[in-house]
Image 1 (spheres, rainbow, N blue to C red):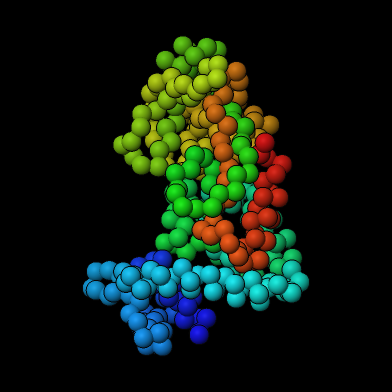
Image 2: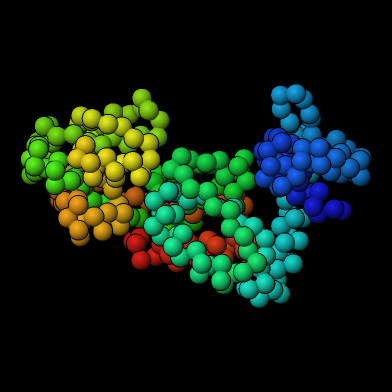
Length: 297
């Protein structure tokens, strides 16, 4: 059986689209359609229901999908079993938060590519939550609470947090010393979906975390804008300490209310399947874990 045809079928099934599968695989839509038709002819069964609006698995296709995944993963594992690390080849599709990719991963990416010269990295950087399966990623780094179901999670630890503001902001509004002082202050509000939750300053109260309601002058939806708004004097932010270490050292930002930090932020690596993950993907995940090790606890 044609392994490449199985790979194409798996991607079409996961994305529910011939066009998107072709884009990810570097093939035309017609080529994808022909390979699927040939596979169905070989099997003597229809695997996909096509319509102008959607592509869906048939009952036979649903059963075949799981077997096809196992077969492809087994083939990849067998091919890589006796390869030296430098002989690993193929593409690794990974999604990372913007600031982490910019500050930690990309500067050190030459190290990974030197160790695995035949591996190509397809790197997506966004603070929005991607759909790992539908968008074809091998692994995703998540900073924050998880909501995905059915994914394999490798929990790496947590990031210590800090409250900061710019010197210009503190000169204008004063330095808060108590939670009650926050009533005359502003937060830079971070929200991936505008019009969602109201801004609040999170703090530890015994064994629980609570929120002190606050006002906001600006709402942003990515970490670069979040930090930039704080540097511009638009409000207080609560961020991982690692992300603002340089700004704290230089005096561009000032720590406030150190006894009222918010809950440490969990850091996790997500993948779609636990069994027979290709060695190139395992190598990337282990490398990312190594990079993060000095920062998480």
